[in-house]
Length: 91
Image (cartoon, rainbow, N blue to C red; front, side, top):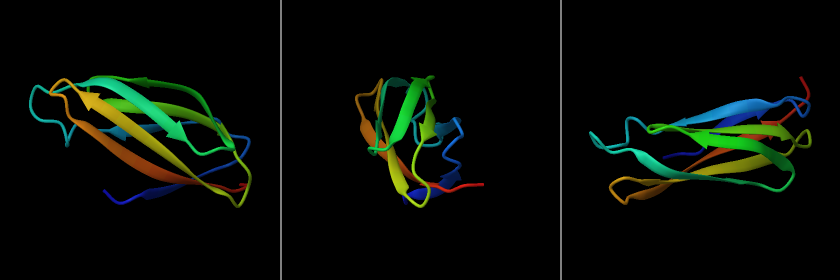
């Protein structure tokens, strides 16, 4: 999957959702989800359901791109990562 680029203001705290439902096999669910965030961006919290994962992110320096990666493990034992790039800019 190609990396997607998103923008946020450095003062904003926003949620970012990884929807895995199209990738999961019928009956397969997410059992574990972990977020990795580039230094300088703050992971305030994260959670997952059986088909998606959410990260609440804040901070960052304007003009700086940050990578955020969601790694899941499924009920079938499959492991995969999806990354996005968040560009911080004043709005």
